[in-house]
Amino acid sequence: MELLLIIIAAALVNNFVLVQFLGLCPFMGASRRVEGAVGMGLATGLVLTTASGLSYLVDRFLLTPFGLEHLRLLGFILVIGAAVQLTELLIRRLSPMLHRVLGLYIPLIASNCAVLGVALLNSAASRSLVAALFYGAGAALGFGIVLAMLGGLRERLEHADVPRPFRGHAIAFVTAGIMSLAFLGFAGFARL
Amino acid sequence: MIASPLIGILVLAGLALALSAALVLAARWLGGGEDDAVERVERLLPRIQCAQCGYAGCRPYAEAIVSGDADINRCPPGGERTIRELAGLLGREPVALDASLGEASMDRVARIDEAICIGCNLCVKACPVDAIAGIPHAMHTVIERHCTGCELCLPPCPVDCISLVARGARVDAPSAATEKRGQGPFPHEKGPDPFFGSPPQKV
Image 1 (cartoon, rainbow over the protein chains, first blue to last red):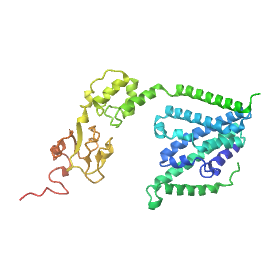
Image 2: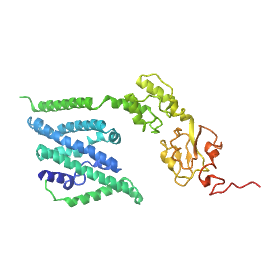
Image 3: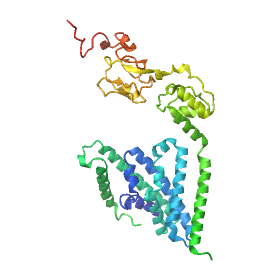
Image 4: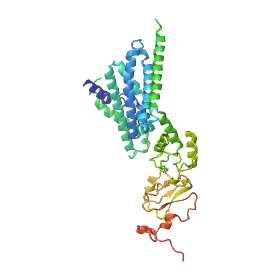
């Protein structure tokens, strides 16, 4: 039950993109098409979950015993970089088509601050390994959902009669802002 | 006791070393060499997905080449040059293009008989290299510079108005499709154009 709550809290109530404003650059950059957005969401989800598990292990068994909590940032970035590279290898092996679609974006996941944010928030809240994994998965779920949603909205906007000054990225930002307002409706559903 | 900054450096360096070792191992296990070979072979192919080789596209053909199922001489659009480059990459002797796939068709281009074309747009969708220009319900034409003569536009055409002519042939030279005109099952193929009638006669 508590784990379900963690997932809902991370995915919807404290949605990383729309409520905490983390990971905005892939949110705007990879949401032109639904397909690309879903692929990006899946890849980010894989990285987020593995990275939150790995950084828990690094934090718990490497940094804390040596009293190096102040070096979490550096340690986590190392772990995330490795997780991204691993994900790229996996995707290339398992689905060359997806690799071709996402190729350029995969290394960019390393600079997605939502990934680092999840790791840092996990260690700040001193969650257990399972809770950390679920928090990461929930964050990934929320990221994927809003990415796909914005992708769909932007696909439709391309055919809409948008006033000239708002065309392109401007209307996308406005849309993202309205989505963010809508997600504030979840506020208070779960405390975490 | 060691000073704290030193511990930090050592721990992080150890972590980085361990992670990179793990990545190297993972790359060795996961990143098969075969995929790289397929990638490099595919890069030499024209990648217009014309499927004249008998495979669904350039990547399946590249896979077949790497696995040894197909010879390197099955790509008419690539012609001699592609065969030479593939032979160089794979360390084989260049061979002649497989004649059963049609002659080196880069010498020929598609030509649309503009009098017969009904603007159905089917050939535009079939063209792998976007060499056919035209919108629905308007006459289409072939951009000769881009056409590879792959013949993929021939089957979808409902009025058989596309034929292959020698590259650079005169535009007003009668094509095979024009000569066939009048024999087809469609009434509008007989006699004068149903929309514009016969051209005005000189008196």
